[in-house]
Length: 122
Image 1 (tube, helix red, strand yellow):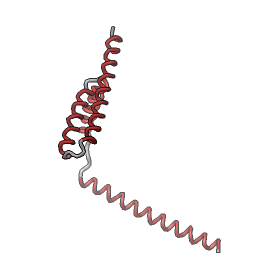
Image 2 (cartoon, one colour):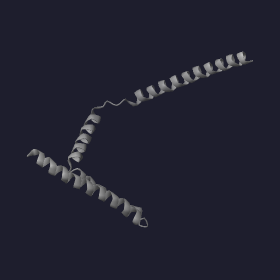
Image 3 (cartoon, one colour):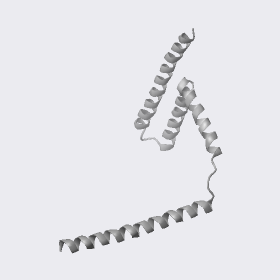
Image 4 (cartoon, one colour):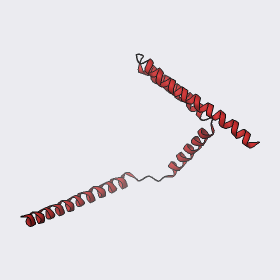
C-alpha cells in the first residue's frame, strides 16, 4: 500500500515539476514579450512567478528535501567561528610575504639558469 502512495506522489510530483517548468518558461517569454514595459514591472512579474514556482516546488518530495538541506546548512554556517579582522590581516600579510619571497627565489633561479645556459651555448 505504501508503494501505491509513493507512486501517486511521484506522479503528482512530476505534474508539479511540469507546472514549475511551464511557469519559468512563461516568465522568460513574458519578460521578452513585454520588453517595452518598465523594468520594474517586469522584475516584479518575474519575482511573483518565481515565488509561485518556488511554492509549488516546495510541495514536492525533492523540494521539501532541498528546503530541509538549506535549513540545516544555515544552522551549520551559524556554528562556524569566523576569523577576526586582525587574524585575517595577519594571514593575508603572511601570504603576500611568502609570495614575494618565492617570486624572488624563482627570479634568481631563472637568472642563474639563464646565465649558465648562455655560458654553455656560448
